[in-house]
Length: 441
Ligand code: AMP
Ligand code: MG
Image (cartoon, rainbow, N blue to C red; front, side, top):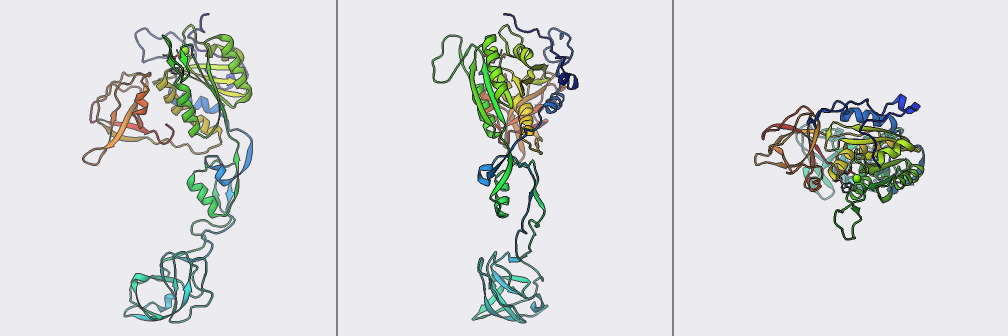
C-alpha cells in the first residue's frame, strides 16, 4: 500500500484553521537536501506546538517527599518567618552592643548559656553576656555576637577588644522567608531545594498538578525487542529505550505500548488506544514518505495532523497534531533524530503541559577544537563534548561521526553544538553555541 504523499497535510477543522499545523508545499529542488522552502524553523515549530500543548487540569494532594519532581498547582504561602527568632550565626558570646569597647578592652561577665533548642531565659544586663551556640536564640537584651575565637576567656568572664560591629553575627527573623509571603509560586517544579524550603516551613503536604500520562510506541517491521535474536534485516528497537529514559526524567506517567508493525490496522488500533488513555502520544518511525510509513496517514484519518519538515539536522520530518484528546508527536525513526527532536521540541511542550512556568534552556558560547562539517540550510544539533583545556578555558570538540543513525554520538556527548542554518563548515578555534544536556539525556 503506498504511503501518503510527501505533501504537507492541512485539516480543515476549526483547530487547524486557528493554528495551521502545516504549510503549503512546493517540490524542493533536486540535489538541494539542505534548503527546503517548505520547512519550518525550530522556533516556528516550537510556537505552533505550544499553542496545542496546554497544561493538564487536575490536582492532587501529596506528602512533600512524594511531590519531588512534581509541579505546584498553587502558590505556597509561608505560615511563619524563617528563621522564626533572632539567633546566632556563630559559636561565641551574645553581648549588648552598648558594651562593645571603642578602643581598649571590655570585660563582661558570662551569666549563662543559650543552646540551640534550649534558649537562655534570663536578661543580659550591663557588662554581662551569655555563651551562645550557632542557631541558638539570642538572649534577651543582647544584640551582637562575638566569635569565641575573638575573646579571651577566664573563669566566668570574657575580655573583648575593639573593632566589633553592633549587630554582627545575628540572623534576624524572616531574613530568609517572611510570614505571609508567596515563597514558591504555582508552576514551580519541586526539586530538592524546594523540598527543603517546604520542610523549613513545616509544610507536610502540597497540592500539585496531576502527572502527565504519555503513551509511546515504536513502529517498524525491522524492529526486535531486546533479548531476542536478530534475523537478517532486523535491528533492535532502541528508540523506546531513549524515550523511556528521557520521559522518566521528566517525571511523567509512562504507557509503553511496545513495537507496532508497519500495518495500517495495527497502527490505527495503537493510536485509538493511546488517544483514549493518554494526554500525549509519542511515536517514532513511519513519518517519512516511504511505502510502509503509516503513522502520518493514520493520524490524518482518525485525528488531525500536520506534517512538518523542520529545518533542523538531525530530525527533519516530524508529525504533530492530535489523536482523540491527546497531543501527538510523530518523531522520525533515526535514533539520534528521536533524541534531538525530543530535546528541542517535545520536552519543552511536556514541561509546559505539566504546568511548569520556567523552562530555561542554557546556551553558552565556547571555542570549538574540531573542524565541523556543515552545509548551509538547516540548524545543526551536532554532538559535542566539553572540557577545560590547559589554559583553563572551556572548549568543545566533536564526538566524531554525526549521522542520525550513530546513537553512540549521543552517549559520547554531553552537549549539542548548535550551528545556525546559514553556517557552513566550522574551523577549529571558532566560537560556537553549545547547549549542555543538563539532566535530560
Ligand atoms: P523510518 O522513519 O521508519 O523510515 O525509520 C528511519 C530509520 O530509523 C530506519 O533506518 C529505521 O530502521 C530506524 N528506526 C526506526 N525506528 C527505530 C527504533 N525504534 N530503533 C532503532 N532504529 C529505528
Ligand atoms: Mg519505519
